[in-house]
Amino acid sequence: MDKMYVLVLDVETAGDVETNPLVYDIGAKIVDLTGNVVECGSWVIYDIYTQRDLMASAYYAAKLPQYEHDMANGTRKMARLETVRKIIWKWMFKYNAFTVAAYNASFDRRALNNTVRTLGMGSYFFPFKAEFIDIWRMACLSICMMKSYHQMAYENGWYSDAGNIRTNAETVYSFLTNAPDFEESHTALEDVDIETEIMLYCWKKVKAQDRGIVGNPWKIPQKEWIFHEAKFDEII
Image (cartoon, rainbow, N blue to C red; front, side, top):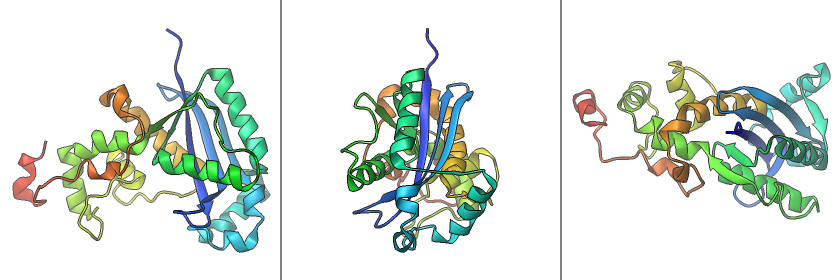
């Protein structure tokens, strides 16, 4: 059987995340299911990043000095979105890697498509044959259903203001590495690194038909459980 390769991708955006997310940072890797990395790239998107007023709206605008430092020392590259799209397409066709995985893949796909359209580059970032896997959904169906995850969440206060257990990449990776103080970088390539590890952990635990995009996967592990020590034995 031919080896399977997956494109794991993450983006950071400026603009309104609900109505007009515009991608200024893309991190991507092509990996096989043992974690072997055959391609890796990190790009600051010239078309968006150089719009200074727009970048002031970036959710992680405080990290912009880090980008400047990284580009100055060569650890990040600035490129036009069209160039990055050509590189990623080349990788996908070279490795037959038309499975695209991301944590909250619906957002990454939408943000990339929106940026392409805004820049007059067509309607879609990815080839039509691309299929999407949501690492978030996979984590919610496996890791976030574990008794030990709920216990660690209880011990570390991993709950939203509404009382829902958190299922983001930061808390899931904190659990996998037993590092409750871990803080996600929120820069694209660094986030791809942790999301790849989560994906590889979940891959065999989640059926193929349950890996795709669905709405609100965070709801999956929310149960009518009382989270205190006396009740942990009731969580499966």
